[in-house]
Image (cartoon, rainbow, N blue to C red):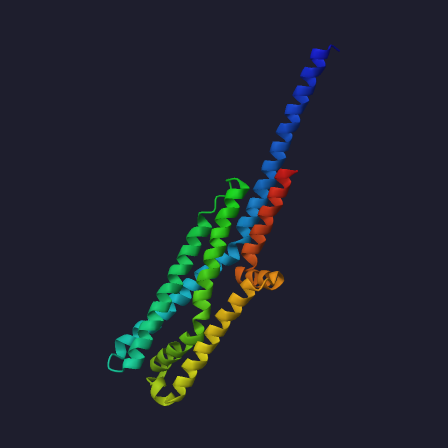
Length: 219
């Protein structure tokens, strides 16, 4: 076989190997992308549940402030519960939109950036919705009692309500201070554990799958 023939044969073989590798990579990406998409379903349904929860909060809040206009404490409690419900729905809606906009056909780095933005928003909104319960439980319980039995929670609690508010403020500030301390103290494992806990299993799984695709592409 002439040298030129051998060279052409090797070039043909090389092209076929490249095509086979590209095909294998695409098949791997497609299977991993489907797995990442299905892995985010718990997060998707969690946001649907949060929207339903938000609607219930709005109904409770509206029922309270519309029927307790003469009782200042209960009126403003209803307003607070109403606003909380709106925020819960808004945050869940934004999260759902970010999930739907994930482009699994894009380069892995692009998907990772999209996922990082989703993760960051999910953590921040979750902290707002979750940490507010240190104080939010007070207007929530007041609204619930007013709706169920027409009872003025604040009148029945008397001076003890001040202690409830104070303990809520202390708990909220303490949680915030601990989070700041964990972020700045150089305790990497503690910070990573906290971030992992706040991120949720769905986002962790999706990130792990993207890392797997990227390693495969680099091989």
